Length: 313
Image (tube, rainbow, N blue to C red; front, side, top):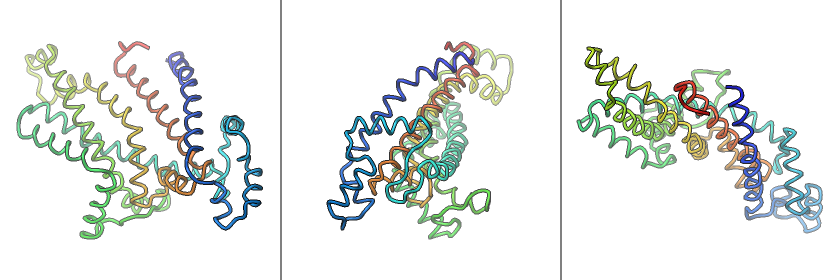
């Protein structure tokens, strides 16, 4: 297992290098002058030229890339052009918010999508199957920002059950933290659940047609035991695949959702950095998102081998 993990990490190195090139290049292609972020629009050309020299913005792009990459390799992401705050500290403060949002969204997606997919496959063509498919298609079609606005209107403005926006650290007030995180997690989790449900249904339909499932039923096992122990266990790999592949989309949804609900997470940090032309912030946030997707994909590969030892390295 360790040798397999080592090979995977080595295979990721060229991809990671290519990603750093893309991140740096796209960030520097953004329109706007970063000196405006630092000095404001009233600064003189002489002042802007001095700032360019101070921050190395007068250097050619390849030199700036090598300088940036060498610092990143040492764990230094630079400082925000706007607030002068260390980007590494900013990431450390905001990652837990996005991590909690992502984990809650995945839990909601699995809790809704897997049982719905099992029932849809069990009653294929029936009312449950049709209803689950319609709800799944509707959830995928609704944009994150619109779903968030609808939830705020219903649960905050109309019913008054939940606060509309804001954030409290879990360790400071667990109950208030969960109240503030429920709607953002549902916003992402419901759309994610639709994809999990559809994949679960497809995988279960394929497995339920296998001979060993018919044999289990012929032995007199209960339908619940057949579905959970025999069918679901063998249908898990495609389900885990879709969950792992959708982590990138989940983080993309966090960018929108955190902005709608005013959560101080990684997504909102990225949006603020883009609007303010804060290059170090943008580069640090995107780089972390890419690394997170890499690690989740690696974890997915490892789970393949745990669930099915026949999967080759």
